[in-house]
Length: 231
Length: 231
DNA sequence: CGGCATGTTGAGTCAATTCAACAGCAGTGG
DNA sequence: CCACTGCTGTTGAATTGACTCAACATGCCG
Image (cartoon, rainbow over all chains, first blue to last red; front, side):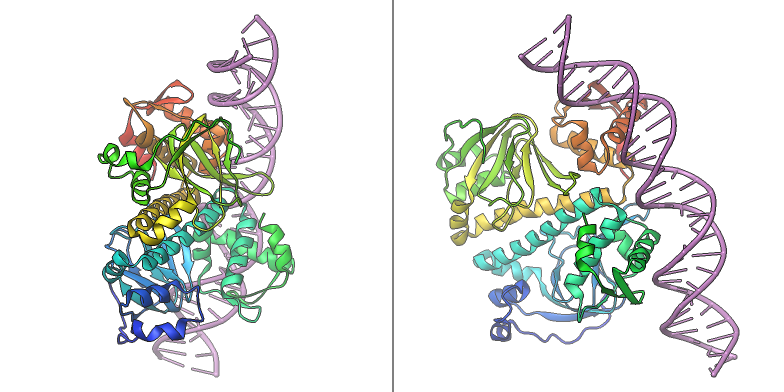
C-alpha cells in the first residue's frame, strides 16, 4: 500500500460509543465499537491507488473526507467503475482474501481504517460484528443490482438522470452538489463515453432541469422532471 | 406465493449432516444443519413467479432441479436479468424484509426452502449461520461486479462468449450443455436483444467455436479461443 | 397434422461512439 | 501581470455496432 501521509493513529474504539450513539446507521462505528479494535487514519493524494484488484484484502475503510472510485479493468484498458464512495461510506470489504476491485482516491482523501485481521477475530465471537459486516455487503449488492439494470437497459439520458439524482441525494448541500469526479469517471460509471455524458448534461441545462455554476458545481432545478426521465 | 405443487415437506435438517458432509461448499446445507430448521420442498411450473419485487422476503431457496431467473423491470417493460440460478444454487436471500428482484421458474423447478424467520432465530445466536448467510450475499456481489463490467464495457460478442463460458462451467456434462433459457432471457441477461444473441451464436457456430445439436444444446469446441474473445 | 412458440436471418435505422476542433480555466514561470 | 501550457469540458460531423422491423424456418405439443 502506497500511502503518502500518515496522520498518527488517533481514534480508539473505546472513545467512540457515546459520541456515535446518535448515528445508528453508521455501521463502521458500530463495528469498531463492538470489536474494540483501533481505527487509524490515512490520507491519499488525488488519483493515488488505495488498493489494487487481486491484492490481499487487509483493511476496511471509511471515508472521512474526499471521494474514492472502485473499478475493474479489461485487458485493453476499458474500465467499469462499480461505485463512488463519499464521506461516511465504507469500502474495501471484499469477503475473501483478495480485493476484486481497484480503489483510487478521486480527490485528496482521508480515511479511517481497521485491519481485517482484528475484525475477523472480533467477528468470530461476536454475532453483531458479523451481522454488521453482512449488512455492508448487502448494501453493496443492492447498489450493484440497481446498477446492472441501468447498465443493461437504460438509455444515455436515463443513466445520466439516475446519476444526478443519486449524487444529489448523497452529496447535495443547500440544493447544490460539488461533483468530485470528472466526465470520464462519470462515463465509466454509467457505461458511456465522456462526450455522451457531457451532451446529456448540456441538454438538461438547456431544458432548465439543472444549472451549472461550473462544470462540477450543479444544482438540480426540477427533481421531479428528472425522476420521470430516469425511467 | 402461488405454488402449484406441494410435494410434502420431506427433508429434515437433522437427517442431512452425514449425507452432506462430502460437500463443504454447500452453504445451504450447512445453514440448515447449524440452524436445525426444517427444509421443505416446493415445485413451480415453467414461467411461474416464485416471488415478486417488493414482496416480503419469507424464505431462502435452493434449487433441487430446474432453473430460475431473477430480474428487475423498468416501468415500460424493459427487463434486466441479474442471474440465472441452477441446481444447487441458493437464491432469495435479499437482506432486509423485502425482495429487491422478481424470481421466476424458467422450466419446471423444484426447490428446497427454509423460512427466514427460523434462520434469523438461529443466526441471532450462532455466528456460523450468520457467516454462511454473509458468504452467500458475498458470492452474489462478486457475480454482480463481474456482470457490471460485462454490461457496461463489453461488446455483444464478448458478452455472448462470457455467457457461454459461464454456462459451460456451471452446467456442462460430457462436454455438452442444455440451456434451460430462451434467447430473449439470454439477451435480457446480457443487455442485448434476442436477435443479437442469435447472430453471435450463429457466427460462433460458423467459426467452429461451438456446435449446436439443437438451439439449446450446445457443445463448446474451442474454449481457449472463446476465452480470448471474452476480453 | 396443424398451430403457436421459438429461433434465424436480412435490410434499414438510429443512438451512441469515434474523431476532431476548440473553449475555458488553473497553475507556472518569465 | 500576462503569455504559455496542460488538462478538462463542450460541441460538431461522420461512423458504426446494435437495434428494430420483417419474413421465414424450425420444432414442439396437443
